Length: 248
Image (cartoon, rainbow, N blue to C red; front, side, top):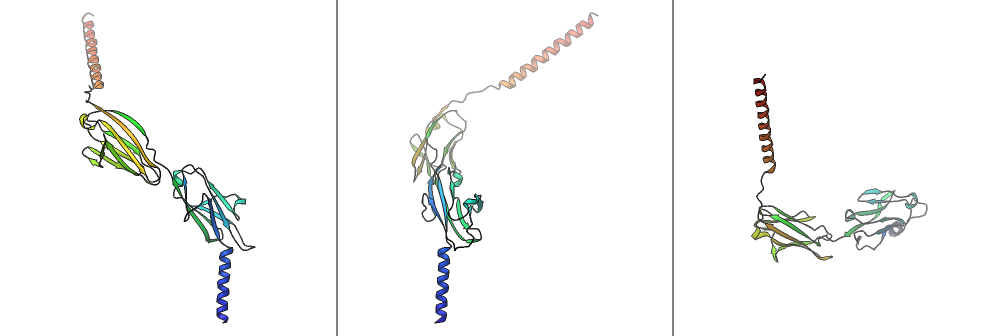
């Protein structure tokens, strides 16, 4: 009986410590399963609520991705708060942790989910010549990630179709056409990004292709003319010196 009472008393003490020594983060806007979703350029306010037994050290510290956040002296006790504004791309996925300075096991964390759309909308014009290489760039940097598709004169393009190659690095989708052909490659190219959150965006590229212009090597010709001219000039000068010697 005594053992049972001691066990119950121990559990009660542990429960009391948990209830009076907790660390909890509250946020504006609120979090869902410790995830805070906010748009780019927005503001997030974090408040760390701290319950502790009387007479104990209540100093709190904040960490961002395990790096210490600098706080004012009057912002280290109960209800310590920080503000993240304006939210940038680099804030996406950042983990903020509030914990007791003298007991890091008492902590709470939240993760930022910063959403932003790709900057796809717009139009561009290209004037090209046959045999040149065409490179079209389409922004696809977004959260959540977008699905990118290309079309040419109303026909969907595969990732690789003949001389047309489509690649992406997670930030930009690139369409490359090697050795342009006037009959095959002039027209309208469209890049479309489809986001589950921000919807569709389109960028239009109007590409004109003309016959290749035969370019004369102007600089070599000019250089050759200069060399010939100087050679003739030196020859004339030498001839005059010889004639002058004859009349001395």
